[in-house]
Length: 372
Ligand code: SF4
Image (tube, rainbow, N blue to C red; front, side, top):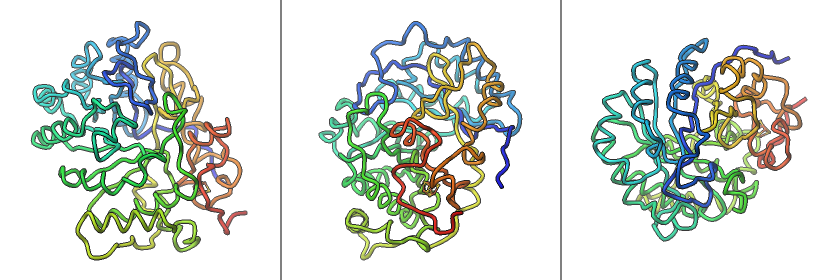
């Protein structure tokens, strides 16, 4: 019998500072717009929210400032300085634009910036027009990455994977490695916001991509996934249902990776149990630009609004939503799965496809033979 935890603090809290952005990327969750909206949280409201985060029980979460392009938020430096004064760990996720210049990076470093994440979805600028806005060039990503690394800031590259770029993942990996970056966060497309018209991977492709990603530790790449929770258990799954992790896409990705990295043969990750570190990740919480609180930016299941309710009260009233892996609320084969507390399935995908954030993840092909 699982126990329902009524106290919970996330590991990461995303603060969407603005929806303004120079770009109009096809998959934009935020449905970016040219200017900040008049109803967005003000800098004073954002600072008060930061104070609430600092006062949460338990281990204080890391704050990730995001957008839109956070650099278009009037007063963003005042907010960063406030977070710094509170001595909170924070990261930035700006759009790769010319606003992220050396002077800003130096300022953020001085304020204690932990890491910066930049998006790269195609290995060529031509391809970038299919998903990222074409003005979002690889050269900008390279420059910002180089300036950040020189300043001693950790860099992470984010890639949204979907039907249109899945075959090019090894080429993107090669670019990331050539930049000297060793952390790659792979977002599996959720058809929300501006991405509703894009094509998802099939379930078989989803499983094979996760399987390939789990091999990349052998190539020195630290991979994390968003809406790909199977990644956390895929190595253990290989000893139970290896057939659902193999196929032509896995073979293509593995062969291409070895070729591009100049290796003689592909290397498959060892079969192991889920790592304890993955069990320690408590989950995320997302505060949108007008104060709405969701489990994540891709799961827009409304829990409350920081303008009207204290953050700690929103959390305590919706622990089952935010920490569904450790509640009894998930149904179907995810609810019966032995990997529930480590994986849990994508709640955003079940909500998007089935209208129920607690249903089974429709992309997972695993049926646990150990289930009740
Ligand atoms: S059935 Fe659900 S919990 Fe189990 S591995 Fe698949 S997605 Fe994860």
